[in-house]
Image (cartoon, rainbow, N blue to C red; front, top):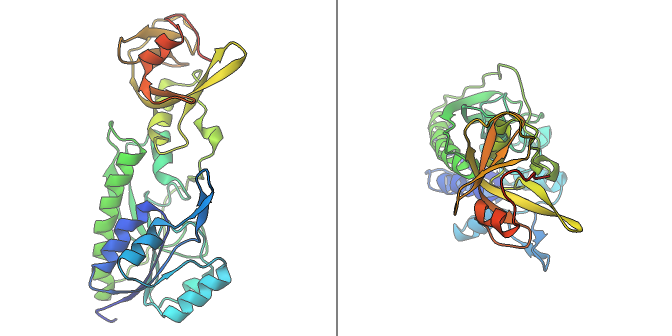
Length: 316
């Protein structure tokens, strides 16, 4: 096993950039960087370069944006890597392409596999109220996050965590794990341990996941606010003359157990200059910051006052 590995790095969004910087500074040779093709974004639908691709340019690394699995295979074959490192690339890699790296392809996944296989493991951990999650460094195979485990590390989920803060702490843990992985591979200490335990899925989040249903338990609604802090933002509606006003919830907190009798969605109390408490199917929730459609974020109580809503009124 060579002391200096030839690494091909595959990633697309911001979350992968720290890992690319780490690989570039690791003492190994990053022979190529691969990200998804540019995509149209914004009102003008201009083509936007993937953050990983832009960083590759800053680091003077050879960058590629293959548009098909055949093109991806050709690019990697020409690079002749010892090791592939994949962080949020966003596409499945074919089995014949995985065989091109002599040591295999390592993926950094933000859960304790086999829990939360899929596109949104951090968000689903918060949506489901997990108290512990983690990072898994595993070897890719032909399945979706099904390959054997190399290294893993547990990370506690804090009460104050939302998706952004949990992503940040998991990324830091993942970078430490990848550094350890490079050292072990260079020393010939490669482990491939089959995943053990009950699998669960973390599918891509859809707008339908953002609808808040106050007939559900307050704990689930709080998980929704925390888990969807990076989008799609959780939202509810308020009936207005001739229309339903959509309101995004940006922050929330647990509220005291409400008195019996109020229907779910009922406004129970208002904190002047702060938030307001809503009755849920089980418990109640303090909405702290909201963003009505077409307006800026504001304290939830200010939004309530602007619509002349008061305790006893019911949200849709």
